[in-house]
Image 1 (cartoon, rainbow, N blue to C red):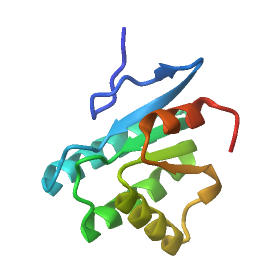
Image 2 (image 1 turned 180 degrees about the vertical axis):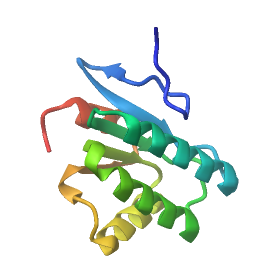
Image 3 (image 1 turned 90 degrees about the vertical axis):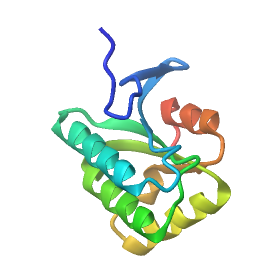
Image 4 (image 1 turned 120 degrees about the vertical axis):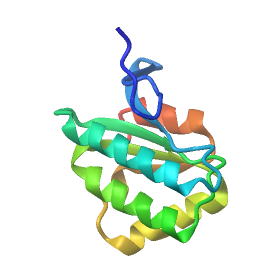
Length: 131
């Protein structure tokens, strides 16, 4: 039986001989209420699992307002204990905003993060042994 995350991604998702947990936070545009509900569902799903995960988050086509960035940083901080590696994919502007906010929060381990505009690149990094 296939397992799905709340955002509709296969979990675990097998890729190039490894696996990761994909989270689709993209295509919410300005629908922040729905996005925040999905973030809360994904967070609960991850926190109730005994497993640590390699996680891929995509934010394509979601407007990254200040409130959204704040929610993302809080979310990543809350699930940090369950993260082995985290890849974040979105456009260049979004990556810059998320990286800056995470650095400013001082509550996350940047060494386990990979920021990219190409999801395939992020997936490949997640399943690799590199940090």
